[in-house]
Amino acid sequence: MSEFSAILNDSSSVVGFVAIGFISAIVLIDGIRYMSMEREVPRLGFLPRGGFAWSTTIRMEYERNWANVITILVMSIMPYLLDPILNIPTLQV
Image 1 (tube, rainbow, N blue to C red):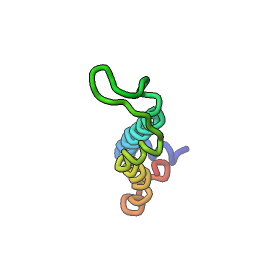
Image 2 (image 1 turned 60 degrees about the vertical axis):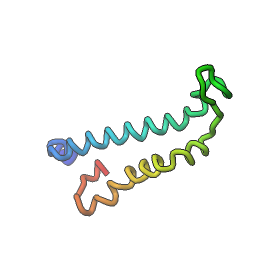
Image 3 (image 1 turned 90 degrees about the vertical axis):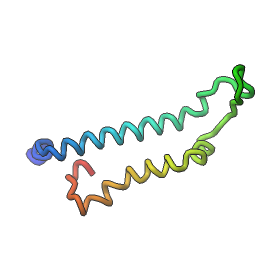
């Protein structure tokens, strides 16, 4: 327990926990967005004010948003790659 409290007392660790919170929120929101894309458009075809709505699948959304998915993966891997250089506390990795 003393190791945990020592990590929390370090000001750089607090910044690290805030960054982890923001990144976790981004990953969670993106994941929910990808899963809900199929249900977002209630009616398919031509829309009353112009435009066209089409059906989609998770695979199509992945292909359309491949850069966002790669960004999420990079954000997940970066703490492990930076740990030897920055000596990140184990709790935060």
